[in-house]
Length: 188
Image 1: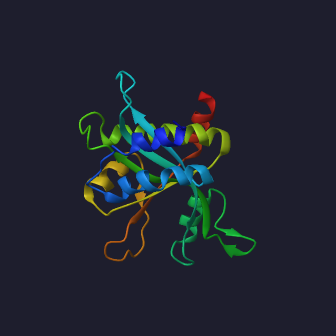
Image 2: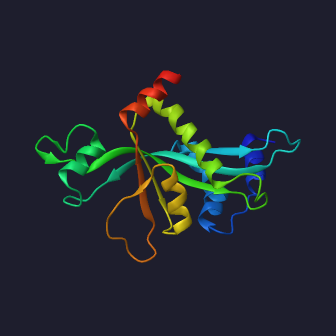
C-alpha cells in the first residue's frame, strides 16, 4: 500500500461537522496541496495508542497579506513591516506572512485535545520554521464567532480591522515582536 493510500485511509475517518470546510480540505485537498508544495499539513495524534488516530490537524502555508491602499495609517503599516510604511516612495500594501490555513479537531475524539493545545502545537511548528526562514506576521482567517476570536486572541492574534461582508471570514494576525524572534532563535 502506497504512502498516499495510507494517508487517505487515515484521513477518511476525520470528522468535523462544526466546520465542513475543515473536514473537506483534509479529505479532498491536503494531499494534493502537499504534493504541489502549496502547504504542509501536520497531524496531532496520541503516541500512546496502538492504533494511529488523528486527534487534530493544522495546515501551514506562505501567504501574502494584502492591505488595500489607504486602509491603515502609516504607523500601522510600519508596525506590520517592522521598518517602514513606504517602499520606493509608495505605501507598502503587501506583507509576507505565515498562514494558518486550516486548524481543526477530530470530533471522533472530542475530549482528547483542546483547541488551545492544537494552537500551541501549530505555533510551535511555525516558530521552528521562523527560526530558519524568518517572517514576523502570522495570519489566519476564521468565522466571526466569539469563541474563535477569544481563542486566537488568547494567543496574541488581533482582528484586522476592515469592513467585512456578511458571512465573510475575518482575518486575524499576530505580529512577532523582536524579543520573541530573538528568544526563538536562541532556543535553536
